[in-house]
Image 1 (spheres, rainbow, N blue to C red):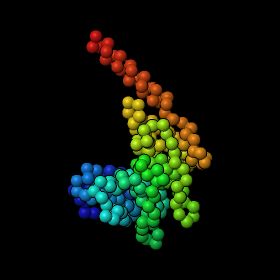
Image 2 (image 1 turned 180 degrees about the horizontal axis):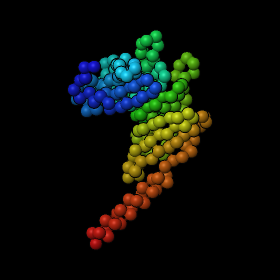
Image 3 (image 1 turned 90 degrees about the vertical axis):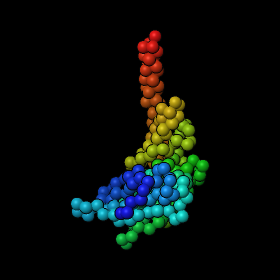
Image 4 (image 1 turned 90 degrees about the horizontal axis):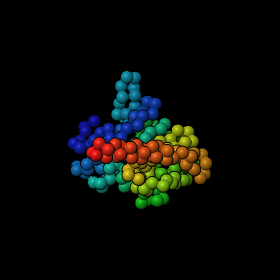
Length: 212
């Protein structure tokens, strides 16, 4: 309701069962809104807005809601100020439940995903211990730390973390078994990266042959 100029509603989205969360992260940050996230619940054939999340006193550069996720009664919203915000639904109301700050704050939080009692925020794994959310694991990749965690997803005990940059910005992705304490990366896109590099080399050769 009442969209604002430059709000960029739909910059991030997630859906789970009858719930949708939509981020409006004020991408160009000209109006100083800091971003918002909206929750919609399906009622028959209609989707009705149920809640709107916004940080209190947001800095202009915060980009709140640049990534969103939802699972059960929990909604997760990331921001560019290196934290993510958890909201919980109880007794008909959504309330701010926790602010999660990564132990390696300099790496920040890029993409987020929540599934059940597990959160993947950038390259940080949090789990609910029955009382509070605790950071348990920091996943590691060999790519530039500033891009590791640009995109994330989870399914069961598997997590995938993307890094859009790296050698010649080819990028790579890692799959982790997060049921193991050390969370080893059991697949990395080295073969895919090599294939892309080979393709790039072939294209370069063809261009050179054409020029000659």
